[in-house]
Picture 1 (cartoon, rainbow, N blue to C red):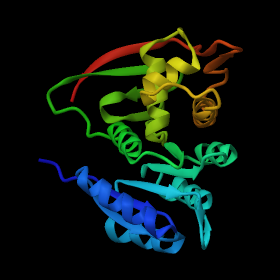
Picture 2 (spheres, one colour):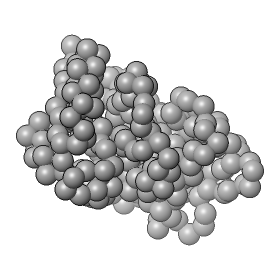
Picture 3 (cartoon, one colour):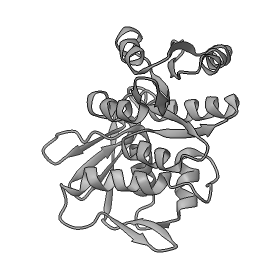
Length: 241
């Protein structure tokens, strides 16, 4: 059996911290809490969380600044942002800085658990040894879904977050197809799209930036009122792990 995931809840509201700690514990998670940016940084070192639930507003600094630092220092540590219900700008900036998902306050703890499980699935262990897996080759890259990795021609790794890799994989599995934002949101996050939800647009921007330096032409095409389309050929091969 695998150990339960360790969740770090960072919020300056004592009532919210206590409520989430109790509820997440009943859902099988190991939970640590922090009330501010400094405590969060210490907890990351001490407990090595598998995921952080991070409030944007902290007494000693911005959760967005912390999110930016984590993207640089620990890009594989997933973050779910908690924002005020109307703070759309914070949500968008948070996604641009590398957050994997966000939830507006007030929220239902059951929805938070669903978001946590979805994000953790993105970083699930690779397939068991001996099984065949698919390799995707496109432009100057090679993607291995079972290892959740993308490499350049020279073998160097492209550091993608779980959300970015999931989005890329959707396109690789459907080469040449025009995919609407609703379809992409459903396939990557398993939920209906809010009319104001710009998470797919932000993730596309992040993905383009990380891949654009390695290819002369555009990898993705934006179709107004239609969605996005991968524009380069995709070749597949099988490998035994």
